[in-house]
Structures are given as structure tokens and as C-alpha cells.
Image (tube, rainbow, N blue to C red):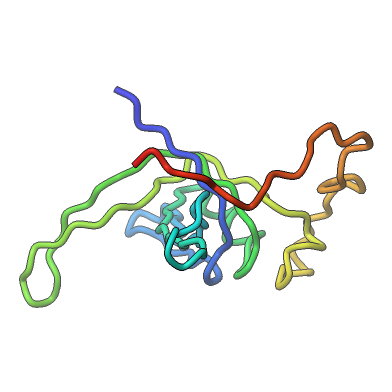
Length: 146
């Protein structure tokens, strides 16, 4: 079976680091991920808000170096959880369990990045390539196949 997901988006809030009863660190955060196409009627892109859970050292890394507004690339698996709310109703939620989390922007582009985190991006990190071989795409997404 294959369950592999890669998403890229901006953190909607600072990650929340907690520990299980046995002391295992776990960080939770939400990514705002723009869809690749525009709505035909409004001409705007829709944003999905995707919950992410990062365990152990990955969770500690995220809570230390990522803050609200930072761009993150998350690689992991999709997990569906069944749970019961306070009123006793059965609920279901989807979340991404992060295997790896990468910086999607440079620290200088990160906006509200924590400057005291100790992370120092390489001098050429996020810089455009010397020879750009790609051309700009038109904004029109054309007809979608669905």
C-alpha cells in the first residue's frame, strides 16, 4: 500500500509542542495550502487548511525553528482519526503525520521568523538561479478536466 503526501504552505500559527504521558514530544500545527487552480466564477484560488502532527525530533525541530507565517514543506502520510466529542458524537478528522519538514523559504523571507533560534541560512539559500531557463506561465488555467 502507498500512503505518501507532500504539501507546501504557510503556518497559520506557531507550532504547539506537547509531550505524551511517557514524555514523547509531539508538535501540532496547521498549514494554509493554496490550490493550484483558480475558481472559474470568482477567479480566486481556494486555500485548504491542513492539520499536521510531527512526532519526536521532527516535532522539536518544527517547534524550535518554525513560526506563524513561515513557509514549510511537509512530507509524510495521511491519517484519518475517529474520535468522540464532548456531546458523545462520533467525529472523524484527517491530518498529515509528518515524516520530514523542510524550510520552504529563506529566513529573510519568513516574515515573523524567530531571530533568536540560532538557524543561519546559507548565503545563497533561496537565491534565484544564475541562468533562468524557464518562462512565465499565463494566469489562465484553461478548462479543467473535471
